[in-house]
Length: 134
Image (cartoon, rainbow, N blue to C red; front, side):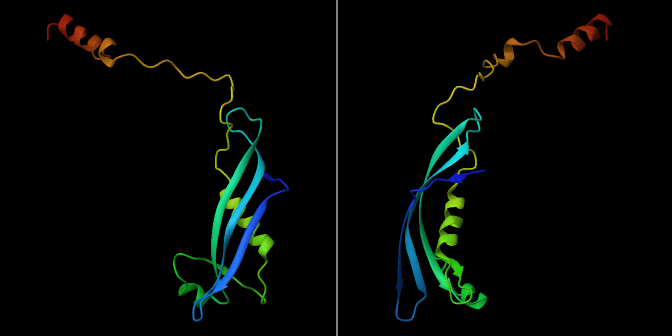
């Protein structure tokens, strides 16, 4: 779960080529409170990304849109810009938020020794076979 903090910035601009799609592009910046997956304490993560949307008015327009643009379906003649920006910020959230360094008390197991140093589990069977004279 994440809480987007106030003070985020979104710079967006619209453009249109004479016979091309309507395009909205821009940059997004925001911070969010999440839970560190190492120590389970609150952590603030910085979200930064860019958007390049192609505005479409139907499913058929969506099919023919340039693959470099993310389609945004315009419903009832309106682009719900705030909702679209929030959706993009949610996509920027890390899957495993963590502090850069935190001490959770966990220490890794020591490195396992060389396999050749350990006795083979089949050595016991070999010795039994030798004792039986087979």
